[in-house]
Amino acid sequence: MNMVKIQTLCGLLGISFSFIFGAWTPLLAVLVVMTSLDIITGISKGFYNKKLRSRKMSQGMTRKAMIGVVIILANMLDIVLFAGVPVAKTGTLFFYIAMEGLSIIENLAQMNVPLPTFIKKYLLVLKQKGENPNEINNEKLNIK
Image 1 (cartoon, rainbow, N blue to C red):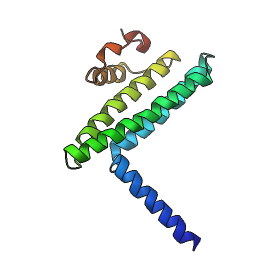
Image 2: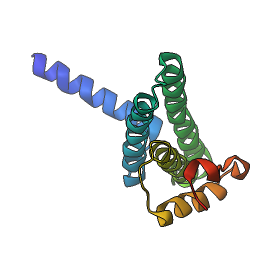
Image 3: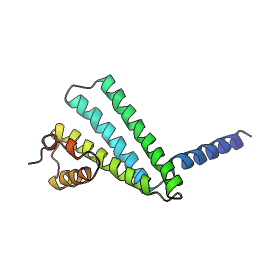
Image 4: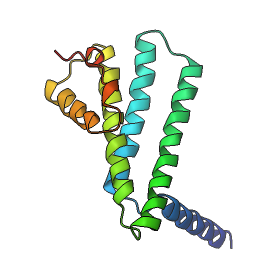
């Protein structure tokens, strides 16, 4: 009887997750991986520079959780405005993938990890197409 309860619970959680976030897509998987890599490289950078602070990490984790809120909002907009076609969600995922990628590159550059220039330039182009092109910091990325 316990197995039926577990299956029911998993089913209810899966249905809820699917409604709130929309269908699981490769872009959503890429964002999860990029977010995880950003967290790992951020913590590594803190150790490397001897500036690891729990308060700063807590703020960073809160910002990461709020990305999920924005994805939920985009998915709800898709349901209401586009009959479930993932227009807003796809744009949102592309934006956050670019931002996470740029953050990973910044973290690695600040640890003096050599990086291919084409990757840095590609992520800068993606960021420029986003909403905050004025926040690009070429100095942090060591691009000349």
